[in-house]
Image 1 (cartoon, helix red, strand yellow):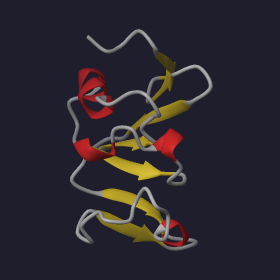
Image 2 (image 1 turned 90 degrees about the vertical axis):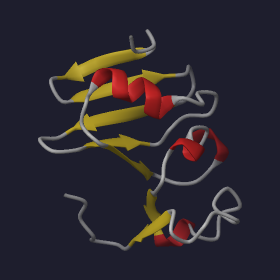
Image 3 (image 1 turned 60 degrees about the vertical axis):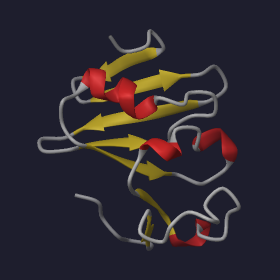
Length: 107
C-alpha cells in the first residue's frame, strides 16, 4: 500500500507531501511520470508502483537535493539541459540522464 503521504488530486494526478517538499505522479494511458522524487523519500518509485501498474518515468523540475532522493531507483531521468552541470547529476552515467530542451514535449 502506498505511503499515507500520497493524496489523490484527480483521477490521474497524485501528490506526495514530505512537509516542505512535494512531488507528483501523473498517470497517463500508457505510462506514468513522476515529477521530482523528494528529499527524504528513498523509495518513491516503489511507492508510485503501488498506485499504478504502468511503467514510471522520472522528470526533475531541477536537480537540487530536495528533488532527487529517489534518483537511484530510476534507470533514466529527464531533466532540463541547463541542469546538466548540477552537482547532484555529476557522476551519473550519461545513459541515465536525458536532457530536455526548451519547448520539448514528453508524450
